[in-house]
Length: 293
Length: 304
Image 1 (cartoon, chains in turn orange, cyan):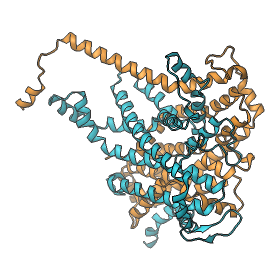
Image 2 (tube, chains in turn orange, yellow):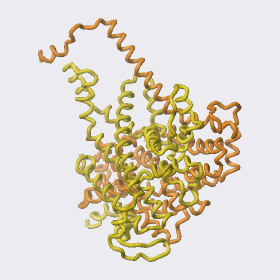
Image 3 (cartoon, one colour):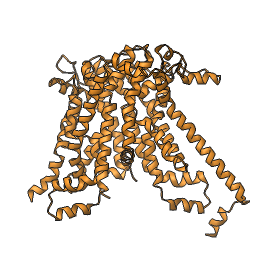
Image 4 (cartoon, chains in turn orange, green):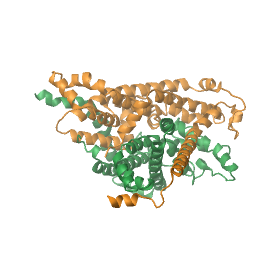
């Protein structure tokens, strides 16, 4: 112990004032770095927004401050593109995928987290493998399967599978359900509740934050998805989602950068709004996906 | 009593059906198709190992493998180091930590297509604000997404902008390090670097492993940003309607493995060959997954 303390003692102990000054300098340094980084993180979105309110002529120049503000660009982008249609498709895809996923994944996650049965580990390992493997591995056979049923060209191939659960969300929900004390479930079972009633009456109310997180993840995933809609709907423009429409805007309106950026800002906006309403559930969900030693 | 034993399986039934129909069956099909030659109009014809031999002679495939490995080698470590750095910075802030956390996190939620468009505009060689800023400092900015040498570094910048999800995971890990360990280290006379090196780093090591494995898996499927960046930067993109001829722009430097797989399958209709590429991707991804399963306790399926 004495050896430890000796090593801890500095050669010349700094005065209180020196320590305080050092602390203040460190405080300023840390906050300056944080502010500089925050500016860098915000720049792309701010620049995008400024570009979106310029005239189409000014948007092609290297100016970054609008000479005059043209918020009507946000109205025009609705008139010159099928944006409302893309938006509707995106809402249908994200909304139904999320609802169906929860319906099918919550019971599965409950069984994996709270029921004891032979083969549970094998099932869980399979779920992990499905979660980890790149979607491109099964793309061609799946595409051929949906083509056989005449469903390519629509969003059905992206929505129907959600009736049968999503591996990532099952994993996330399981991690959350593990944190619910088993005592509550045992009490319900002693009271004569079957497993389904235990799930509906006891587990569901307690698992609301986990369900919110999984639902948000699924919603955001579908909202942002580009690969899926590109694969299944690229030949049929009436099924395009926002991501797909956005990617092709630039080709059609390549001189109207102000409109392209206005559409881009519009695609980001709902996500930001949802995030501010559900920030807590979201951060908790991300934390759950990480591994605790 | 027997019904009781079946209950877990009724809970799992939809998910199990989903795994078989949307994963097991197509995976086996992919293996079978990889030994055949066909397109959307013809019946699969058995060609043995021809598709796998073709993989060794396809210069674009080799380029896409090099591109993907480059992204894995650069993007994954930079994202992990950056996320740890940001989370350490956040824990050190007395004031405004919540505010900064939100700012750093939000870009991770931006739709990849929207974020990519933002970066292509931001990094436009002629009129983009980044090169304008560099010019003011007397530096001639690169051509970014329009240069075969700089297109992948540009994608890395985009990936670092969306670092927020990883940062949240590391933030939880760093906050979870027991304070008693830091106190013990302080008694030992450890300075800030020592505290990080000998206390924080070993404690969050499982999370680093997790982030590495998921990062590698994620980068192996890297598609959206590469596809959109190539299309938009080339200036002639109609990415929605069919397969863009500008994928991989410039000079194939943004052809990632999945992007080339998609192009081979759905633009050139070489479906047998695309399945051979898919099987190879499966083998690599499975190997990486096994590393995680063997090392991380939370994945072993045991309850605490």
